[in-house]
Image (cartoon, rainbow, N blue to C red; front, side):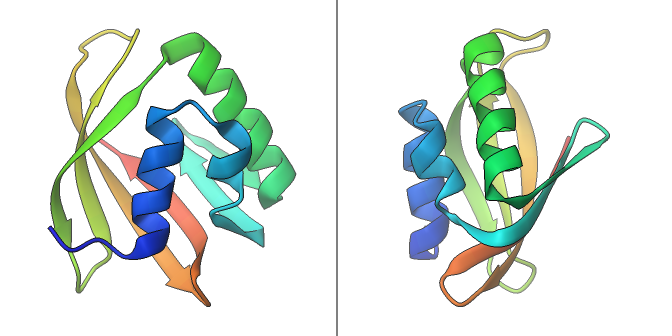
Length: 105
């Protein structure tokens, strides 16, 4: 599977529970939409993923990538009901960083 470098970096950061490295994959004014909430900017994204890492300890295993739509399907495993599940990560990329991410089931 041929993933853009920034998405590969995001997956690596998630699987290492490295909240700072995860946030550094995003543009300064990026947005993440997950579980009905929007997280604005790198600082808020880092705080959100740090809390999620502590609570869920989720890891990602990429299983498919739609290059036209920038959608990564990943088997996501962790401490949450229904684990593992396949989640879809909808990316908007620009200038080598993630401008927005929407996570859906």
